[in-house]
Length: 536
Image 1 (cartoon, rainbow, N blue to C red):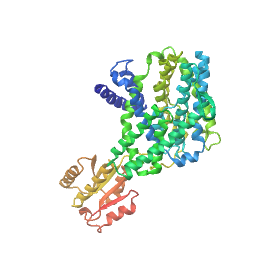
Image 2: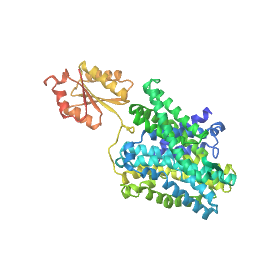
Image 3: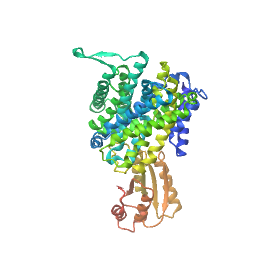
Image 4: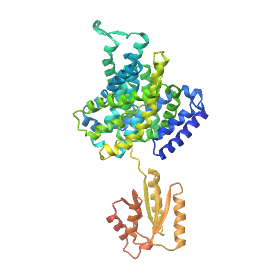
């Protein structure tokens, strides 16, 4: 097992980075590694790891859904009204129905089997959509109208609906009939009539349990201080979120995935500082979870079953997306303030399939349902086609179809490279400037540019470089010397390197003694648009 995990993590990471450098989504490389390492090709993944692939993928999906919840914006969702709710039901329903009729026509399926296929293919992939939408939010695309938030929420709700219908149809096809249930007052209903009640129950209980879990985390992690750092906060939160998923599998009265997502959402409302720390922790978890998820996803794809169904499978996918899902998108955004271009973004932004298809695609075949092999083949094909395409299309078409708004750093982590400029001379104040710059860089995991102006003495420069190397030994840094006006040189270099802060001495700079004491720092303070930190 250890050898398998080493191969999965190392090859998954580096091949993913190769794919990224080739301008393709990293998951393309990860899925490819899974196919090559899996039983279809090299068979280098241990059977124990393959047997545990389903729970491992569940853990990874839990991580990404928690990230999604921690990135939702209540104000933007409220602004959208019913759009997010309609996105949760109409596109998936329309796509499932259109695929069912297409399967009856192409594969001669009966309607329940065709609809079973529709439920599998219609489900959206949180593993592709959630990172894509959070990335758009961090860059500001579509945030003014809450488009990423609406897509995130709709994706979670649609999976609840389709998984419930899938379970109902599977039960019907295996047993030949749906079980009846007797309600209070002797009222009897069959499983089909009970479906709306089940959907409402799954959603409502999922939201309620998410709120309870969020309040429990705030009580344990903030009010009673059971943890001492972000890593421990993340450990407790991830364990509780995974517990919700496990309970939901054992007791399917609520949606575990929806409960996890709403836990993150309510944490923002209950304790924003805790949510910010957890956002950072789950970002780190996702680095590992993403590799495991997509490599094992690739290993689970049955390449051999694609041969006979490649062309009709592509036709099914095209019909489902271009006709069924497009009708659902139109109905979902009808009467909204979305422009035509923003509505068109739903095609690349809300079509990816991966996680659900890998989880349930093989179930009909395992139950001996007629056409199960064809269903499995189309499920595998949907992953191979739509997951890479969706991961590529989301960042590619967002700048063309969406408007850029102001990023809210309280709702999403903004990845930026932090650079500190330390302006030093040869006086004793240089030590304090370098120490302050080093402290700031360590706190933000940033880099330091050490700038020295107007000294031509090689020995003095060498001494400064040695001092910088000693104080900044564990920090990425570079040493720059320039000549010219001191204030202008400091501001120019800071702007060229897009530094976050300028750290400089307040007085006592030997090369500046001809000027009035403090006039250089005063000139920088008055002219710089970048924050200046003065050290005495």
